[in-house]
Amino acid sequence: MTLITGHRGARNLWPENSLTGFRNVLQLGVDAIEFDVHLTRSGELVVIHDATLDRTAEGSGPVRDLTPQARLETKLKDTDECIPTLADVLEILKPSDGPTLHVEIKVDEAGLPYPGIAGLVARELSRFAVDQRAVLTSFDTSILEDCRRHAPQVSRLVSVNAAWAQKQGGLAAFLDHVEPLVKTVAIHHELMEAEWALIRKRLPLERLCVWTLNDEPLIRQWLERGIGHLTSDQPDLALSLRASLQKSSNPAMAG
Image (cartoon, rainbow, N blue to C red; front, side):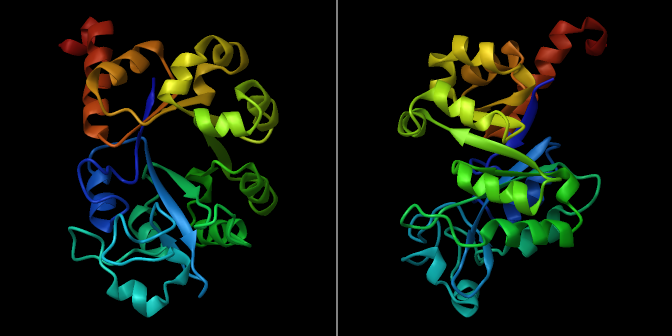
């Protein structure tokens, strides 16, 4: 069965990477929840996608420059909430019967890893006792190598799209590098489609994640292919389509 991941909580349903979004997506019954982590100069791990504030918050400039007080005063757009810390998010998502947590470790506004971030994230996951159902994710393999050093017990996932694969010398070379490093390879749906024959020769379905699918035809296509993981901004739709496909393939489920 394809496992469904809510992207940045479920950003087509609620403001991305918001506490409201995380609370609500829990109620959908997703298999996993994905969110993004940056590190500020003051040492706070904060949950926001971009390396700058401008797109999703009522502010501007690099996330790394946020002081704790400024973070509390900076609201996410279309909410009355401030930018959450990793601890804020884990407090909501920590119940032991909860979904898998895909914790993406981001790079700074210059595209460089934050020094020491992997160890700090690993420590928080352990503090909230969620490390056994967490997955540490990144595009940057050096970050994932740090994750392996600091938290070898935590699963790892690498993400790639066509532009990133090209920078790494092509998809085949990229897969050579990451296969021993990660459990799961998350591939943008356009690259996955274009390189499907190569990918299927290299990796079993359960090690593959396709992202980010929000349209019914594409979601249905990848569900029917039996892809291991599917990431969506619209996880309610993905869950509904999965349920309907399961019923159609098993008449007994239809009652």
